[in-house]
Image (tube, rainbow, N blue to C red; front, side):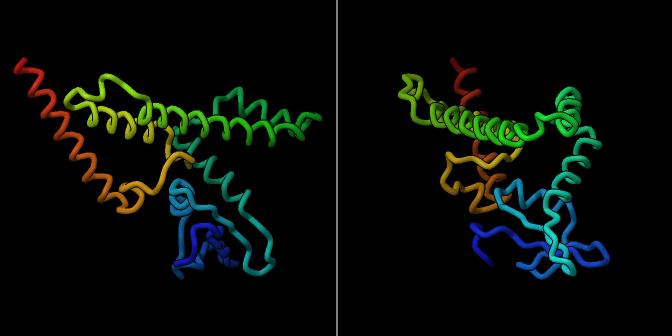
Length: 185
């Protein structure tokens, strides 16, 4: 398998089918969204012309998620984006959006870092580690798979969904043990 540092090259054939050049198989838009959620950069090119179609397909992925009710972009933001194309402000919008997402990633990184590194007197409490892991899992879920700068490759990245499920089961067991201990008190 190729390095995760290079963008994953997807070729679009004349039939509009998308071909993953690393795995030599056809992929869907949802597959491409999954690669991106996993932190992989993707480049989509037209096989015949060589044109870069990445932006077009990323916009299509966003539009499909928005149309399914997975609304991330409020109406006023979408309206402002449309307006930005007809005003002189359109040159500032890309830098603003990029800076905003960078701040979001940095904030997520600092929040999780503080949860793990801050000397906390509660850390000696039984079950605290399980609660901390549960909070981390919650934050990862809430951030919707945004790439982060805070992590090494954790078990959930190395082992895939099976590793994440095992970790979740362990957290549930620790939480049940903690609840049992609390009920005895």
